[in-house]
Length: 351
Image 1: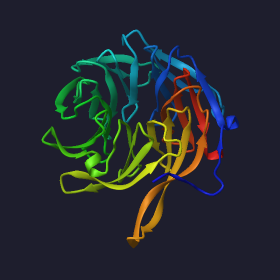
Image 2: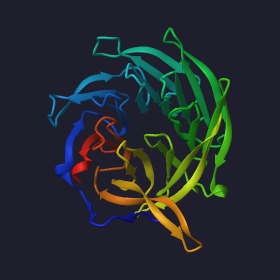
Image 3: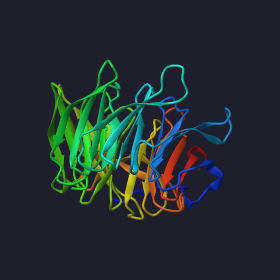
Image 4: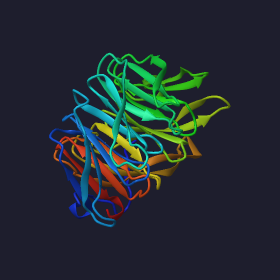
């Protein structure tokens, strides 16, 4: 079903709600993420650099680049992400390597800790587990690697997961578990459950399961880890319920939701407040909310959740919106990264 607009919503480009425009990258920006403390933004892209940004002063709208990590990856940096305690930052690249950076206690600058090798080609995504012990990476070689951070801050490969038939675009650890979700160019979402440091694919969610019928670009969980969103190249967002068993989790489809423009959805994120953001190929950002929808004519007493369109920000970037991420400590603040080489910070609470 199409995402319906709530009353009073409208489509607009609201520049007054742009808190900051971060300029400095020399190529498209593929990814933006927040430190878990909410005080630092990390960005990366085609210029093979990671930039770290912080506010100039408390309460100020301006951000300044406080650190640039470069001359390590030799090709595009596709993703970066902070560990749970923010002491480490990982990055993955089209050069088939993963770099892990560490900020020593009391220091402001990051140092390269280790470079992980194993993937045969471009790495597309990474995800830290909630406890910070595991790092998952995935890529064009159709594989997913699970790395364990050891006591001496070195990393050991625990498992290599095979099963997808095309590029793996996204990986996500389900909060509170070691279960992993993956999304792929093969139009599927897979669920991997862990048993004794080995991950087994226990679900393959495809078109036969009312799943996606095009490339699945992104995954995200709500704050409780009870619901999952997956988004695809045809503008479809699927809402899933996480069913937890004694030793495994499974996904159960709740609803299928189409964004009005049907543009490719490259990124999706779920704010702690419940607001959902998508980054799209038509240069726009959509803001949505999960709401209860009463049953169908076949089952009037049934109820389920669907996604309602709250606001569409057209022309959010002068190019594809590659990534959207909410501030984990200030859920009314959203960062976005685009093909136009800039990152924008938005006050979505004012839209």
